[in-house]
Image 1: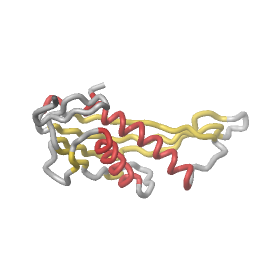
Image 2: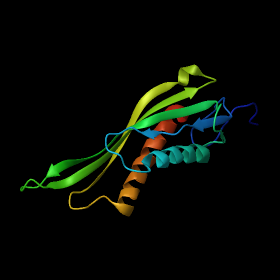
Image 3: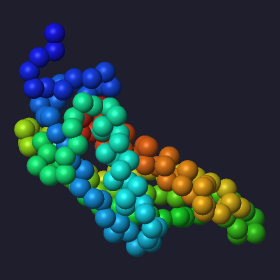
Image 4: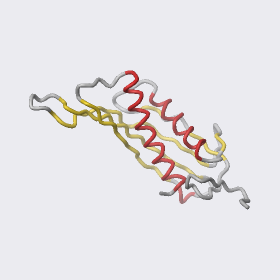
Length: 153
């Protein structure tokens, strides 16, 4: 019933004229460096595409190529108490993505994706709470990248 060299699956991607994809390493070029977030993002994007498509991951020569960099990683106070203490903080991560579809150049884009996690000003975002916040942010950003590049939502 499904024929040809197209990929079809039930995650909303429809038909994709590609068999392979590659995700180049996303370097952390943010002013504030959090060790390991570049590797974690690269792997998160690879995993999401592998889990939601039938495309094969390759290290070079992919039909679809994702590349870019982490351009911002910051924590900012969002609200303050009466004594000028942060009542709520926000961790924000912004990632510049360049997507290339070698089979359909009109799908190519360069775009910034950003998401955040709010947390109480009394809480220190370290260890497992930091890892959980970054995972939540990456889940949203990688899904947004997937939607823009493959699902067209």
